[in-house]
Image (cartoon, rainbow, N blue to C red; front, side, top):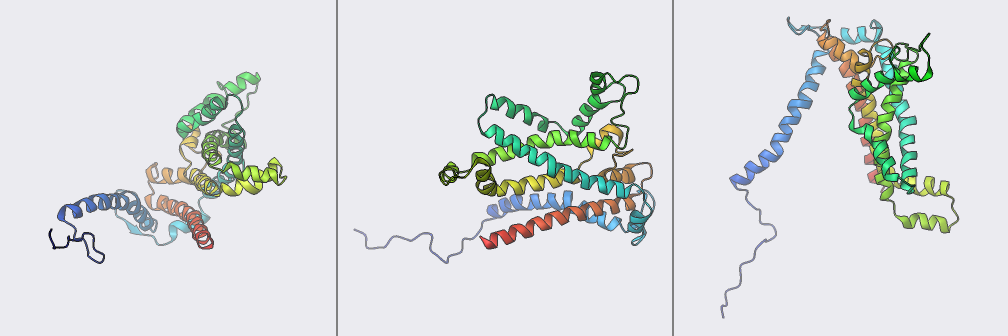
Amino acid sequence: MSLIPARRTGRRGVRRRFTRRDLLVLGALLGLPVLLDVTIVWGPTLASVALSFTSWDGVGDIRWAGTRNYENLFTAYPPFWPAARHNLLWLAFLGLVAAPFGLLLAVLVDRGVRFSRFYQSTLYMPVVLSLAVVGFITQLIFSRDQGALNAILGDTASPTDWLGDPDLNIWVVLLAAAWRHTGYVMILYLAGLKAVDPSLKEAAAIDGAGEAQTFFRIVLPTLRPVNVVVGVITVIESLRAFDIVYAVNHGRNGLELLSVLVTDNIIGEAARIGFGSAIAVVLLTVSLGFVVTYLVQELRGEKNR
């Protein structure tokens, strides 16, 4: 019998030395995503911030303009404030109408009504469509001369110009965007409702709580993580909205959005890259405001738990 003790493995305090192969794998797994993120996201972002203080048409020399682009944007550029109001209206409509309606549909489907699978698939179907396709569908339905809605209404003598009237087209487009957003929200809440512990509902029912009390005091607080995700998605959808209004009328005549103004000034006939970058920086600042607020609330919530 050997008296030599067995060699211990995995001693505490002993550092494991990485081989060259390990370093190459770590570099590939961590370095490449970071490099892509810097190249695709942060590089253009910082370049836009720098260009927003310059005057450049994309061909000639880059000239320093200071804050003149921002001054002209806030005081001498008429489409800016209507576009900002439309973005805020977009956010309010999706957040206060589409998202609650998606929650309502999720609750109804979660109750196990007949043909719930059919309803779930039908309501989710618009989500797989891009907003550009939704814009084309909107044109087919609400077009003045050949639209399906005016044909159904029989309004041929003086048809309603749903997409050409600035007082109507923004609401028509918001309705189309909400049609797509509602299905996405419904699926998110439906997944959250499936994860709610049934014993919580049973305990509330034993205590004499009604369905409304059980939902608002038990189920809805349990859905807080889903509420956060829905809120973030709603903000993103509201600020990045572009293709649906561009497909309808190129984002003009009552459908101005900040993203459309950025495109028109950077790649349009004007080719005012510095000025368009200033609009992009404003949009970035608004986005960061929501993101920072969300992160601060989440960090405070983690400390209080």
